[in-house]
Structures are given as structure tokens and as C-alpha cells.
Length: 378
Ligand SMILES: [Zn+2]
Image 1 (cartoon, rainbow, N blue to C red):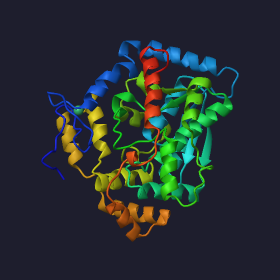
Image 2 (cartoon, protein in one colour):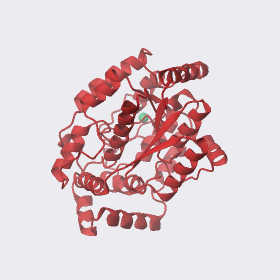
Image 3 (cartoon, rainbow, N blue to C red):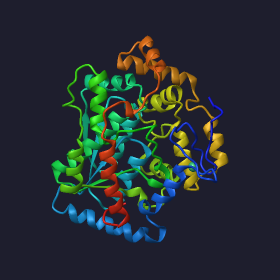
Image 4 (cartoon, rainbow, N blue to C red):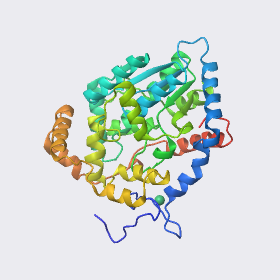
């Protein structure tokens, strides 16, 4: 619903569905300014790409000398992580792939992962989480009435990557994030990737078995240790190239027989349900808005095109939506009444729970400063 206080940015399409958005005198929003501010420190300039990438590859190989693997990657079966696997093999690196199986991957995604890693001759380590525990965590997040129901997966993946890297003496984690088209950070839309205190608090309040030992996680001290003591570097390698998703998809299809799922991050049924239905309906959050705004910033799409695209329903297929909801309820063991109740509960945020936001911002600021001074990788 668009109220009388509704406002949309004059440059991108971010709007007051982010309750913390603010605008300058020209009607340009804070996300646009953030993009401009961080672009320089995150994205390698075209004329420096070749030499920066060569140096990075040299550093990774040097740090991995004599070890079984020189870097570690997370694989989901989606476009970005698949391309990272392909690309770093082309660069002559020797990665270990890690996959977090939370029980929601589409069959197609799992097939994609197996086939591709086989072709590329990359070893795979899969962590299958105890389903009863993970189910309980997911229900706790649904009941918490925060928009952060995908955080338990994100946090666990990061925890696994750090843990495996530390255990095997690997100094580089390479991820498929790229700043140019995935920079959007809206804390009221998604918070907690690195905040175990927050996850634990929600679980304590809404979970039923209260033991998170088997859930891969890291504390703030752990994050500090991984970053500054073990000096594990997290590199977003797609920031070193001109990353064109459309082009990349055709390379993957052609070279690896990779199959498309029909939506960004829709390799998981839960993600499709969560971003395509739960967030828009309960929280008025449409994550496509952030992504399209990034594409405007990166000049891959015009503002007019974005405005047209956002008008389309996130689920353009009603029968698929029905199927997904039924599947989700059955898998989680929720009945329709409890799901209705969850939908009707007034929306809240992470601020209603214990969290480590202040400390995490402090750590992140240090890392960003180091990046700006080129002490650590992009
Ligand atoms: Zn904007």
C-alpha cells in the first residue's frame, strides 16, 4: 500500500519500504550515496583489472603452497557461485568446494552442483545439517516476526567456510558476491549474517530444543580470530572482472551444461517462497527493488525498465506459489492456522532482540579502512 508519506528515490527505485531511507535535496537516496562512496574501494578499475587479478592469483597460490587446496569456495548451484568455480579453475587455482545442505535445495540445484564440480574436477565437502534442528530454527525465525528468516542459512554457510578454512590451513575464501550489482544493504530488510548472538536469542525465545551445538556458527570473537589471527581473507573475485550475468549464464550453459532455475537465488525452494511471498506479503519488502537499483547504479538497466520490472508479481505463477506454500508447510510441519497466525503477527525487527550490531559495525569499519588503504583484498 502506498501511503501519503510514500517516497521513491529520483535516481534508483529504492523507496520508503525501507523505513530508514533518507533523501538529499535532489531526492537522491542514501543507498545511492553509499554505492558511490564504496564503489571505489570495492570494485577494481578496468585499467587495473588484469594486474590486480594476476597479483591476487599469485598471492593465493603462494599462501597455498604445499597444501591440498589453496582456496575455498561455497557452492549453491546458482549462477554466481557456479561461475566462481569455473573462473578460478581457469585461473589455475585449486579450490575445495563447500556446500551447506539445509534440506531446501531444489533437485536441479543439487544436480547442477554435482555435474559441474565433476567436470571441473573440484573436490566437494557437503555439510548436511540435522534436519530437526534446522527446521526448528526456521520456525523460530518465522515466529519471531522479523524479516531475517534466511539468516540462519547465510550464517551457517559463512561459519562452515571459516571453519573448514581454519582446519585445513586455507587462507582464502572466495565468494560470488559482486559489489557492482549486489551492494544493497538494508538492515531493516535483512540483518544478522555475522550475528550469532541474535540468532541464539531468537532461538531461545521461539525454538524448542535450545541446543545449538550442531548448528554451524561463529561468535564475534571467532570472527575476530578468523580475520586477524588466522588471517583468513574473504575475496569477492567477481569485483576484479566486468561481471555480466547474462553472458555468464550462456558460458555456464555452453561449457558446463548448467541449467537455469528462473530467478535470482531461486535455487532453493525456501528462498523462492521467502523472497517471493513471505517478505512482500508480511513486511512489504521486495528484494528485487534493491537488486534492480544496483543494476541502475551499474548502468545495466534504466530506471524506467526497473520500474516496469518491479510492477510484475514476484511469483508470476500462481500455481507454483500454491505448490511452494504447501510444500513449505508440510516440510516444516506447520499447519495452515499457525502459518496464518505468523503472517498476521505485527512485523518486527532485529532491534527487538539481543544482538551485536554495534560491535560488528566496529569490526567492519576496520576492515573497510584496510580495504581503502589497499591493505586487504577487494
Ligand atoms: Zn537511490
